[in-house]
Image (tube, rainbow, N blue to C red):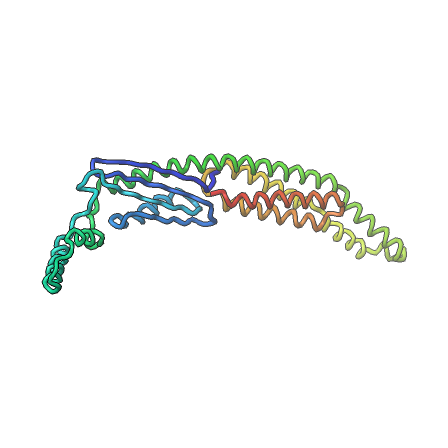
Length: 290
């Protein structure tokens, strides 16, 4: 079992660039991947998404890619000389019209602020390889965090499952003899209020049997045992178990609801309520399971 909360980061370098990839994950019912990457390498966004989708079942993931040049050549994009020449010509025209010479230094600073002053940098295969390799390392660290959270959650689910099983056993003890008590109560009322000849009518006997069978909870108890064993098996898995555990817990809750409508003993009803409370606690935590 794995959790959905974690963080992984990796930094790789070559002679010209430092590449840093960070991956953050928080809980979400379905898988959602958001990638933040410099414009020059946005064509890699789908590759990074596919890498994570092949390995993660659900959760909200944020990927941040940072690329920094290590020398003066790679740190600054190529200059857009054609655009700068046009701006210089415009500057000279303004000077001729105004008859005065503004600060050329200020003019250069204003040009440097403009995005159009620089050409778009061409993608580099070396940088692309660094991004993919850094994502692989960052993902490995993210998985370590998620596995740690998963182990803690696994212990929580085992503890709650044992508690539910203990409450299930209490219900069995309290509800023992409910069917016989119902049969006896109906027969007593028939004897009291119905003539003797009518109380032995086969049709009435059949109705007594059918009503008493409705109070039998043996099938529900058997299904509860099956679901609890299923949860224990699922906890051994490491990928994509959150939705399955959520479904099994929903079925467990359904069985206890049915039992609650059948049992007669007050203590059995209380045990049903406590069991449903434990299941609801598990349903809250399963939202943090991948």
